[in-house]
Picture 1 (tube, rainbow, N blue to C red):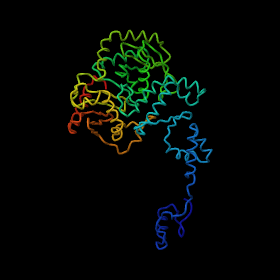
Picture 2: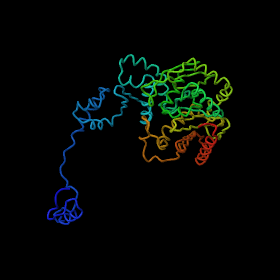
Picture 3: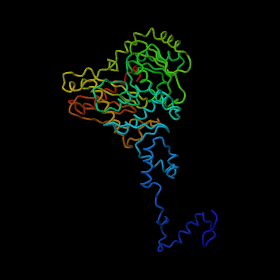
Picture 4: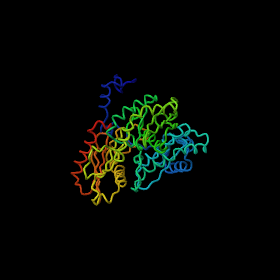
Length: 447
């Protein structure tokens, strides 16, 4: 620093000068504290209540208004406008699309995830460029009709009222339903060989809407993309072969892929994401050649539905159903125990679909609230950051008159088990741990 300390020849920046100046500060004058003295400051007028209300009214009146336009209209900086907009419960996914959701009994985290999934379904159908800059609003509405069945499936996920309905593969948002069978290791090699023949890195096998096996590259896709692709195949129904143009909402929102679906037998389809080649007729011919010798294996694997895991894994009779979730890979397994004693009062009061709805509600309202088992928050629609930072629980349970639920977290996986009300709590913990060990012990299941 330039300059000398008063009364000396030492530079101001030297340590000796600092001590010399400090020694001259008389304590009796009130200068012993090195901090600034309090003084009147300029009042904050940029975010007054009137301006905040004015900004909120403009956003409600015009959902397409941008931050830059608001900044010019109210004469504030963009940072202040963003601070005003933060408390608003709106999901502005892009400049031209605003999604609003309303539900009874659903928490904010679930609704936010629902809006994200709905927007991704729209991108899957028409691409991000068409949504950001629509050339014709009526044409865009017509093109979005293809994703209406997917939106219906997604809306079922926000239904937490426990209605007795047929359970589909859309029970959990952002997660694709899978099934485990003893034939998975054989099917895995067949899927990889077929995907190589059709020149694709993303191949997967669907059995009654559930993913049995898939290539490693397909599992590396965003969980939302895997979920929507499986739903799209499910809503298209069974067909011999079809070719659907799709956009990947996270990996390729602007460049389309070809989703090729070939029906094999019954409710089993082999699917892949391809480029412009090979043509559909060639893919159909290759599929026949690759899978004609595996019909018996496919039929044996189909017998695991709706249990979704092999009969070699026997559950305790006190277990009425289970839900196994892996947030890191974006998959879940939902099953009910058909060996549970049908003569018990609890079993008679809970139908098969009702059991699965109880597990789904327990997962939404209890397990995901108190147990932060999803460390990967890098995804665009991730809501894990909204969970409390102190969520470090490994177990939790929920008791009612006719049933009990217990959840156990192990790494990135969460196992939720539905029990009869007569099962003691300490027994629930033992059975849940043993069930998790049974499910993870068999490496041929390809979890």
